[in-house]
Image 1 (cartoon, rainbow, N blue to C red):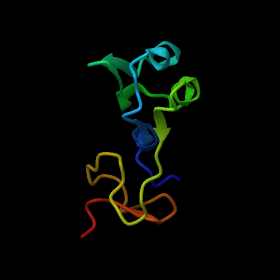
Image 2: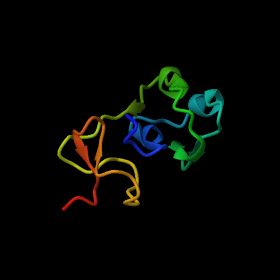
Image 3: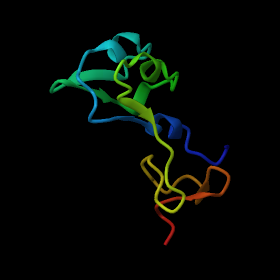
Image 4: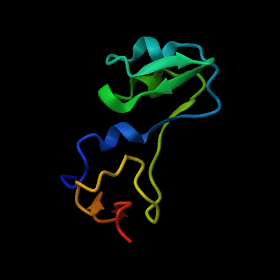
Amino acid sequence: MSQLPPDAWQHLLRVTEDCVGCGICQRVCPSGSIRGENGRAVHTPGRCQTCLACIHACPRRAIQLTVPDRSGPPPWPCDAKHPRRALRGHFHCCAVP
């Protein structure tokens, strides 16, 4: 786990099309990382504590914790400053040819 970028877990939350913009997730988020935009929730990873309160509170189950595909690039932005392997060597940085 030490091979992950420090904010990797923040990029694993995803708001699906099932979101109806009720605002519950925005109210329960302790870090203010979720806001409403165009009638839907939008997750901004910068301050996210990855507490998962938004996932548990959503009545539509529209916020999900995603697990990246082993063969694809990681869901976090790659700045090529982190090691080429992540999550126990199963995921590779998008900088790997």
